[in-house]
Image 1 (cartoon, rainbow, N blue to C red):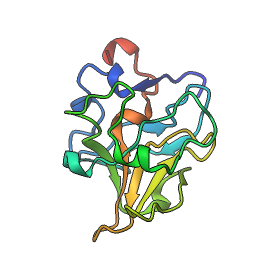
Image 2 (cartoon, rainbow, N blue to C red; image 1 turned 90 degrees about the vertical axis):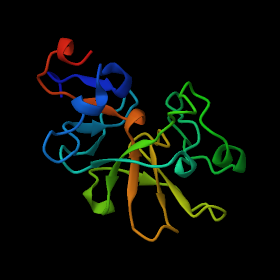
Image 3 (tube, helix red, strand yellow; image 1 turned 180 degrees about the horizontal axis):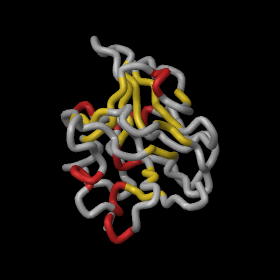
Length: 164
């Protein structure tokens, strides 16, 4: 990890093309916890597929990147409101990395199921920062969704001029 750089979604000049493989729309880079002090690998390259979900399906409360404890809060207030941490409500979390098997993750944590919504929030297993995604236990198809703008990307040996 010493010679690699991690970038956030907003650091890319064209994230919709730079973050995906050209042939199959999968993640082009390893995905890490967004917390700069955490080195936790969440998902390896080519295991997540970029998908879009309707805004009404966007159920993530604000992320808690500054606190390293108790970041998967279950309060009704956070469950029902849109993110207020600078993410645009018109574009808020409509793009996700989709997985269909939770065992595909390298290291991930889940909250308890929220009874009202059937959601389990996804967080970093090492530092508990999150939520970075969710799993809807009431959905017909099993899927685990990681918000593209709530994680960091290891671009390996690429130089930063190619990113921004």
